[in-house]
Image (cartoon, rainbow, N blue to C red; front, top):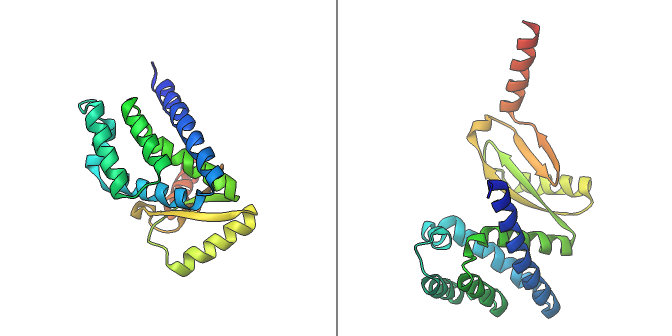
Length: 188
């Protein structure tokens, strides 16, 4: 099995679980809670190497994974639907697709709300005012409600890179220097 096939399979597995959770929660009217819980679950994954190890390592038994994910779900006060889904994933040895599940849930929720997420990488952290201005500009451009996902990469030197859907706007100093360097190579 190639890497592309395993990624595609993981996305397919995660997509089925995410669609089921989304449909049930949507019928119950709990999309706002699901969005909050999805963000909290992503934060837990980002912050805990132990959690990442638990979901990825084959060394943990189904029971160990189920017990740990059940305790986490209870501590985070996740909804019954999300908690039960995580338990099912542990029993079926599918916790390794948790990052893809979170991503797919976020996409489904955003689509339902008419939102789009813009990934913004900047050389320095953006102030609240800068984030609000950028959000307004991108909302005007896309015609949708925009949610920013920001991160800092000092290697950009200055400027930022904005990815909105399939569009990418790169106004970083690093890319401008690279373009200048390529232009100089062509001349010389």
